[in-house]
Picture 1 (spheres, rainbow, N blue to C red):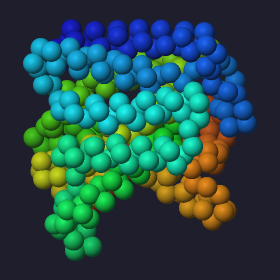
Picture 2: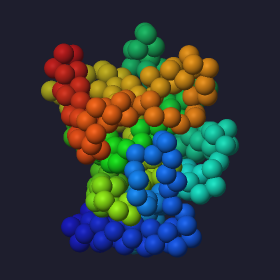
Picture 3: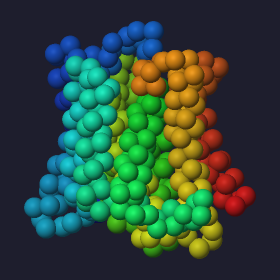
Picture 4: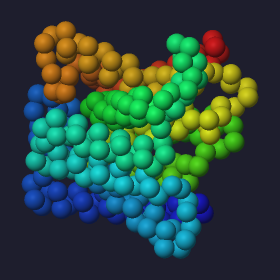
Length: 310
């Protein structure tokens, strides 16, 4: 992708963020301040739909030019989940209904050819039959998109974790990935959200539309890592499962911890609270930006440590 397109993408992202925030405020669609809130100023959950619109318009532009900069088919499940997330941001959707749509999106992703058919020797398992492969892939897709949704609890955390993941995903690929243009597009779209996330007033959050969008994209990338098409660079002799764990360590750790904590306490694992790891760190440091930096550094150090060890 050329510099001019990337600059246009950046400008378009800023435009949609500002316009959508004005629309949300006009119709009083602001984020409710309650005991779970990490902010005390006006904020809208409009960032995710801004991301989706920017990605869609840039993709549409290239599509009409006949320039397939990435596999456009992933826009369908990503768009579906983002719209469901937006509806949830406004009207509050029952988690069971969201789960159904997540399953539908996962099936669309699988039908588009993104499926885990080989476990690469984990527990002595290699090739999987079609039914088990589909069920496993569906489970991982739903788990990953919920993991990103779960960590979207303080300013800038979800976009930072996903950005780090995308950069490492591209960096460690031996021969490059078919997603390089989409990754560049996504990173550029995300950048303005840092400013609007950390503003002192009139903040813009991802919302469920954004966290589920990023989670769906991350799940597609993880499924791609598990295929034979993704080859880790020769100087990093890592098993693919370890590689995924190393670059996705925080969402995995937080999702696993909070899921079992709620189950043990007899609570629904899908009911939000403030017992996530990032909430505990924030209580200690009293600063959103510092909390994000700490978790980002932990992610990078864990990735390096696993690579050195294994």
